[in-house]
Amino acid sequence: MGPSVLFIHPDLGIGGAERLVVDAALALKSRGCQVQIWTAHYDVNHCFSETIDSCIPIRCCGDWLPRSLFGRFLALCAYIRMIYLAFYIVFLSGEQFDVVFCDQVSACIPIFNLTRKKKRVLFYCHFPDQLLTQRISLVKKIYRAPIDWLEEKTTAMADCILVNSQFTAKIFKETFTSLSHIKPEVLYPSLNVGNFQSCVFDGLAELVPKKREIIFLSINRYERKKNLKLALESLCTLRDKISFQHWEKVHLILAGGYDERVNENVEYYKELNQLAVKYDISNHVLFLRSFSDKQKMNLLHNCVCILYTPSNEHFGIVPIESMYMYCPVIAVNSGGPLESVVDNVTGFLCTPTHDAFADAMEKFIKDPTLRIRMGKSGHERVMEQFSSEAFSNQLYNYICKLVE
Image (cartoon, rainbow, N blue to C red; front, side):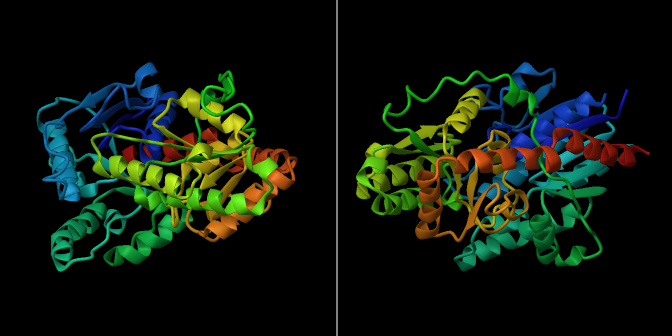
């Protein structure tokens, strides 16, 4: 029997961070570890299917605490919820475990030092939290100062720090200046390929008009930082580059994680719909809010390529999923995609402009065989660099070192 690992995560919904947590839990379980996941929020109607179908216990505590105060103070509320969750685990749950796998919010790490036998903590840094928000006003700067300080100090208390890419490792060093003595290790996210192999593809007849044979796809949460606006602008520019006959075959699907509790999701969804009407492309765009893993695989199987629009993305699991499904990627030439996508081989890395993206999209229209060639190269790259076996071995070794 391997070590007992307790995962603690703020909100076990649908997103890249949640995907990694679930995959990490499944990987360790497959290696004989006892695994459980604790979270402040979990909804069986808005989660990855493995959390329902697997034998990993999911424990939810602290969801009664507010996520925000009048739509503000999101970070403060997230920290309070995680600290409360950690207190509950340590002092009230009675749970026994060897290692804590913590991600996103490091403020809870000191709580695990309060146990009779200090718990070893592995902290997975997707990206420094303090860089995920802007400080436009003086009030915001004052509000964030103690939170940023707490993030840096508590991150340093972890016994092992992992990051999701070389890009994030570089940002980690530049952001947490007092932690120059710490060199985080890179553990690339991987795919649980078992989820991809059992799919039966149905086509997209129920989603798009039959004549739309050239499907471009975007998969990202409805958040402004994901820059989904770029996909719409690129489609609009593409219309002016191709013939009417080709244009009538083109369709764009914006598929994204959507949570009605999150104001930004609701607002941005409306903004994008209005933008599509403004550009007069709404009859060539489908907005898909949240979807099952099976639907996602079907979308990837049937589209020409993925449009991955966020800049300076920490890593980005979507390009990996896409390439595994033989689907090329058009991504912004910054952040994680620089390490996952090979330009002109598995897709195209472009400047974040609608002209550059439209030019890349046009290539797939002019050369239908490009999708096949790049798709094959992408699949091979994922199997070589981002296999679940490599991820599982590396993570298990880190856990074992912590309990030696």
